[in-house]
Length: 192
Image 1: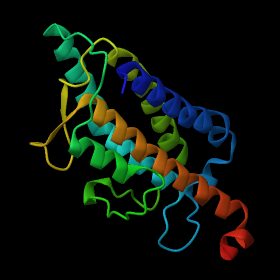
Image 2: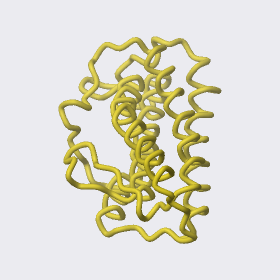
Image 3: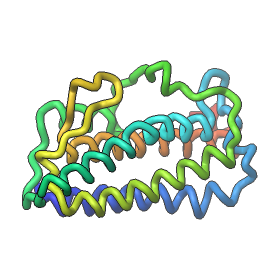
């Protein structure tokens, strides 16, 4: 795939999530984000806190890798070729994936959160991600490597890291939307 096409797609997906957070979620009563749609189900704020936990790891790691690549004279490649592992992780994280995964202990959000702070952090991270996607246009997405959060000796290509990170975000933003819909329409959530 063309490297710029991949980055354009990721930018658009991230911008869509940011727009939803700013135009919809910021305008609702903050406590609505904290309501669990069912016992044991994550609230919208918990979904966002889960994503924030991953952003706390991946955004600095990506930023550092891009800076180091620029300093080393990296130049962009026209094409990006996903590794088998990167493609697997990205496919696994897609919103339409039927695979259920258990979150690592350090990424399980607390039950009670400050929803306004959680949302603000999510918005800040999406804005930071957009800047990193733009910065990535100046380096080789095939050669820059990022250690994954669960096993740091596994290092994925930058393009693959962006792919699975964005897919994971899309998956949990949809979960947050479903949680808010269930809270807004409790009768409909019973029917589903």
